[in-house]
Picture 1 (cartoon, helix red, strand yellow):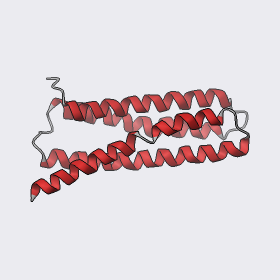
Picture 2 (picture 1 turned 90 degrees about the horizontal axis):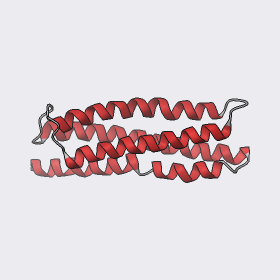
Picture 3 (picture 1 turned 180 degrees about the vertical axis):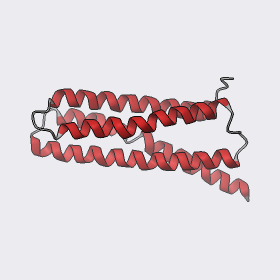
Length: 147
């Protein structure tokens, strides 16, 4: 019976990882569209980006929750090197998501904002976050031994 719970947790964990990474790839084409849009359409695209970031954030919450449960009920102890490194990278990712996207999106609404510079930063922030999420994915799948 426990195997069924564990399998369900693995499924939820993998699904939440997909939703924590996948929607970010939609942001890049949206940014490219914003570069050439009038202000009215810009606001629509920025709203879509905010929704995408919310989806990623909530998927991240589920990812962390299922990850903790998998460690509690699984065969790996907390002091395993890949678990420790995952927690460290996850902390960096959480801080980055909380500060990186919100700051950039807030600046977009300011008068006299340099739209092209902000869009460049938003693109850079998106790729950095995708990179961090892929690093987390690698740690969880490969489970490397660092010590």
